[in-house]
Structure formats: structure tokens, C-alpha cells
Image 1 (tube, rainbow, N blue to C red):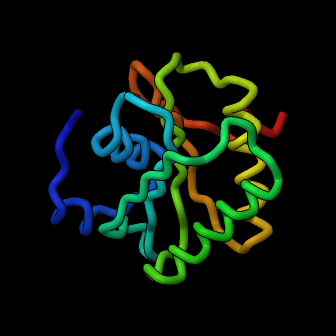
Image 2: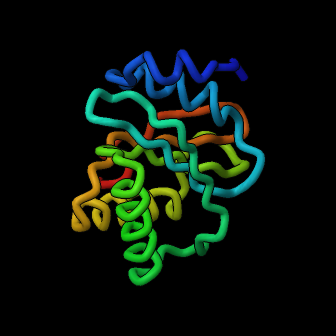
Image 3: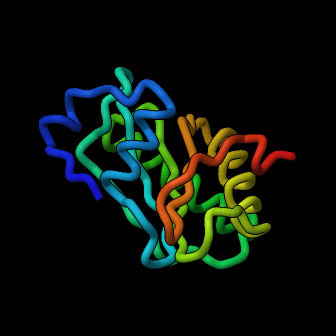
Length: 140
């Protein structure tokens, strides 16, 4: 895992998919457990100095749980002054998306949109590294 200084993090905009993937690789890297990470961006695509892990979400994405999670993300964003969120799904398995990975990505994306939460990106932290999750990966 590459280290990143706070001064670099708050000066370099994450304005490309490649830069986002590099930042997630540097901060989160390879998976070690099941959790969801939230990274927040300001209106200049600068990462805010806040990285939120959530490890108590259910295995199956039930509508009430997904709604509560999206509402919580919206509240954190409002409190922090964030305008976009990056979702990083961490789980210790291979790089291929499972049906549950797809279901969570699809449902949380939709619920965030309904709550007015702009999701800039979704990524997967797996046992070998980090990969991008494109909308085509979970919408199709």
C-alpha cells in the first residue's frame, strides 16, 4: 500500500477515474474484512479529511437497510460539507463481482440518487487489490 500525506490528499483533486482508483488503493488497498468505506469530495473534487468505515451492514440488501444507509450518508455529507461520495466495498474474495456485490452496488446507488446523494464512484477492495465498479457491472 502506498502512503499518502494529508497535504497531498487535500491538494490533489480526484477528477479522473484513474486518480480515484489510485487514492483508494493507497488508502484502503487489499481487503482484509467485509466493510463499506465512504470517501467524501468537495465541489473541487478534493477529498475531505474523513474516511468512514461501516462494518455492520447486512449481507443481503433489504430495502429498509439500504434506505437507512443512504439517509446516513446524506446526513454525513451535509454535516461535512461534502458534495459527492465514493463508495468502496471491501470484502476478502476475488476481483469478480458476486450477485450480492451487484445487488448492494445497484440498490445503494439507486437509493442515494433518490436521497439526492451524488455517488462519484464505486470500487471493490478485494484480496488482490482494488477494482473499479462501473454502472454496467451492476445495472445490466
